[in-house]
Image 1 (tube, one colour):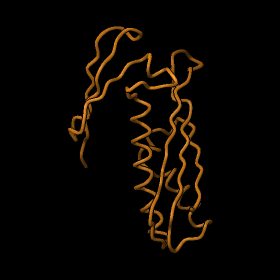
Image 2 (image 1 turned 45 degrees about the vertical axis):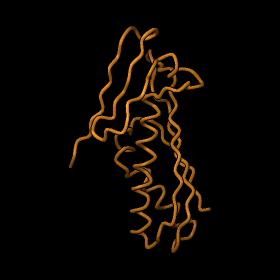
Image 3 (image 1 turned 60 degrees about the vertical axis):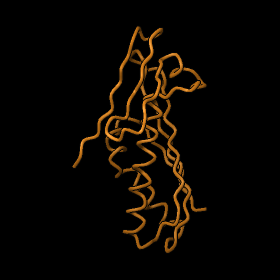
Image 4 (image 1 turned 90 degrees about the horizontal axis):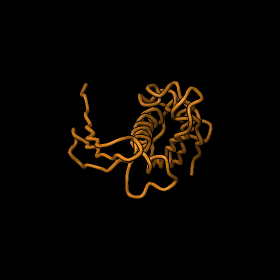
Length: 145
């Protein structure tokens, strides 16, 4: 299996510094990062590790859910997945990802709501990004459209 790479160039202190993260493997872009904007309510045109984790989790989950729906005898027509990743204070000092909320709405042929819920839960537990984030509380809100 492949290895994917990103690279960050950082200059300065945590509070005053900034950097750029490059999605090296795909070459699709380089994005600004800054801790003050990371910790603010508004991103102000910069990205953050939490946004990248949210992107990784939502896309991984969508792929895994489509596989589990098919295994259960259904056909996914569309899946709309959102991952909300929250950065908060760590009781041991510093910061930590405090929780992740996955929300999925799907149009699926061949599965009822219960079958969809079972596939959705299995995907939450089985997607590789969920497994990598096993120490974080991950909640799920899943429903058919």
